Image 1 (cartoon, rainbow, N blue to C red):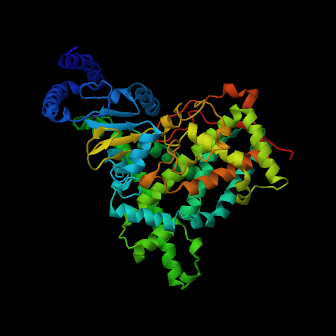
Image 2: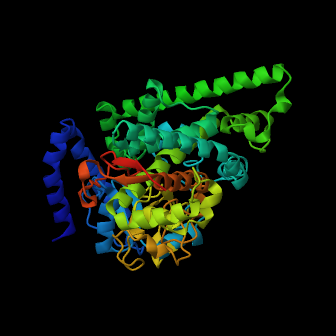
Image 3: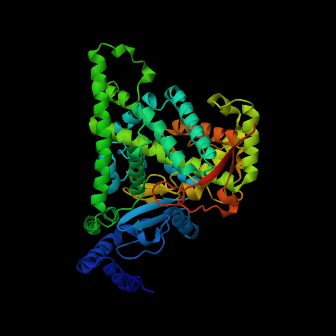
Length: 528
């Protein structure tokens, strides 16, 4: 069929659907059609000279937006099976490169890392994360380099992570007591809720010096954090079809994003004011020198950097807020989802649970609690965590990058300004890289040097290269310690005698992939 005829037929098919979605589109669709035809005509001469990656057929105006589906990581993986691991989509008017293989991910994130190290400007992240003043979405440049260096050295270094060891061990002991309380009341444990509370409590104590959970305010904050992560995973139509940006204004979506941003801003603003008041009080009492370096929390460190310009970097209040928000987004939601899926798989695979408990209990012996000193010997525990990260990367579609100049990848021309999405979920299930890729088999990592810290591109749940997550050590220290203690202290089963194969493993949608249904389990104190 002639491309022009196909274009008109597609337009006629989607027009009734779009008008039904919003009646006002009847006035804008003719204009959009005319604009699309003119743009297509003007761009034909330049695009035909380039060797572009393969693309699936697209609709006028929408491009390939309709093909993302409810679970974009799965939809894009299916498209990549038909069109290749380097695939060019058009989400509205925006070119988007989708990477679905380890070798191409290595070229993008390592070989051409500098070219692909900036972030695309997106409406929702712009509103929620202080217009790129945070670390995760800041444009690549001198500010980002200095701020990342400061965060790694001052906040996320191994020395700093170890300084919070007592916090982690204390919070894990609190967690164990809550599980014991559920057992004494003959109630199943809502592990999803407890995991979320634990990671939130650890971050709050490290970042703010105290917890903000347990009461009504704490529950509201956890809900707000969950909504933040959900919104960060939404594709805003205005980013891809600018002429339709008004739709999200009319339906109230933009107002909802603004509301969440304001609520988070007020929460963080109150914390900053509280810290400033405490610092002024300490200095007025002449006891500034009594505050040891590792008694300071994250906010203290950032306020000192701002006041003294000790990092050689001028940062304002919004920079500090953005960094604090990054810590919550990266340190809570993406951390507890690993625990949630790991325990889900153990309940589905009693053989793996028994083998893990045998290792952990053999090392712990009669200790009441496992400490971080014991973890180094627990090789099967580490294999279980790696296998969980392989099957359930916390952010299955790594945070998008954008090319800053024209570049060639695998012989294809990638133009400057192309948005790049790396499908870490698809790479971790690639049958050319993994035997039985959809099965939960921790043993695959027992005699393997593959790790998840960004050096092995077949397993990049936290990204890699310049834009890789700098807080991996911080996040995994909590996960390993809690997981070891859970299987050491308790035997676990599903409620009402349910079998592992009966467990609902449906995923929810959003930036991070959680269980849709909370994980409930019955804990029985072990006799060992």
